[in-house]
Length: 300
Image (cartoon, rainbow, N blue to C red; front, side):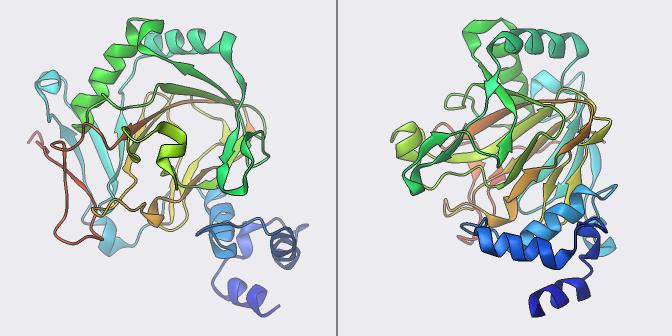
């Protein structure tokens, strides 16, 4: 009860509907022990609040240091710089606009549709391996370079924008979220990379998430530790770094996909691994600092 009172004082009343009391939500959360690792009841409350917000809310003092600009870090982009909106500095979180055309989106969706199946989550720590779970309700398919000439072109384009190497990147994971589809709070870094990928890949240092559709209701990507909500915009891509300079996952990148309320949501993910990034990402001075790209050239 004291915890419920504290959360109400912090302004989290809006995380639940009037017919679902906050106290009841927290009692269910505790009784079911649904929070593992670094997630908490407060993270869950913030997740729900952000899913209901209309925009990402940052303090004026912090947001004043962020920019929207044209970026041309690679010759590939000299004639058509990419539009970048900075959402956070450390860890780097950016939203890039118009990175894929409608025609390319249709090709990727047509390739994925015949192969879509219910997504599973990895729970090796619990000895369960991969299994279907209500923490992730979506259908996925994987697209590889040999599937269509567009796929290697997409890798090259993302390399040009991010400065990262796709030599150890995972295949494109296509995901379709129907009504109620969501992905609960999680981090993209993995606790035991050798179990998942073997010793040569390393962990997921960065995530590239492309929105392949607009969503008429719900479906936002939220970062509860940073108070950021990103609403899907067709053709845009969300990019962030997952690890610190010491190679440890950055808890600030804890994120989730909000439930789709109306319509359908299409996205595609690419996860970049450590191998191949040795000369692409700079380590900060301090072990706890964020990784930095080796190139950043803005158009004036």
